[in-house]
Amino acid sequence: MDRKEKAIELHSKGYNCAQAVLMAFEDKTGADSGMLMKLSEGFGGGMGTTYGTCGALSGAIMLAGLKNADGNTESPKTKGSTYKLDKELYKQFTELCGASICRELKGIDTGKVLCSCDDCIRNGVEAAEKVLFGE
Image (cartoon, rainbow, N blue to C red; front, side, top):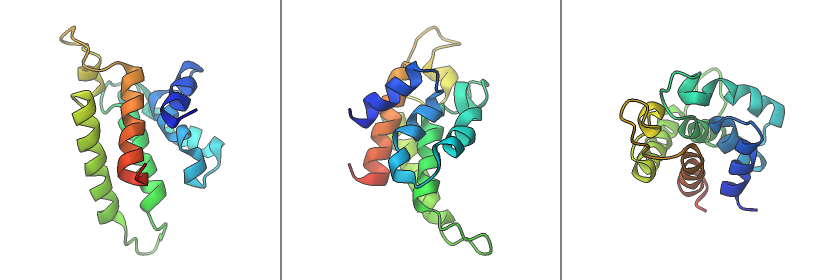
């Protein structure tokens, strides 16, 4: 099963969009699955059901930190390079989905859905594969 379909399967089991994207890359994170679940739980519904930044994009951005950050708590040196990855993830995601805000993607105010949750999840995985892992 590819990562996109793994993420969709996770979403169908009740994982939120951020969890589905993040957990589809569990093997690449080196982190405990329970910690990944906890870390991403509050990002569903566009950051805590506020319909803000899409959870699928948030999950991909969490992956950027897990992949790139040096973990140096005294003097982090990777923040700039992680932010660069974040910007590229944002660019890829918005090109694929048409927006980055859950409210806009779901068409809450306009009635016009730009991208379904499942497609946002697929696109979040695709962006992460391309930007972070060269897949």
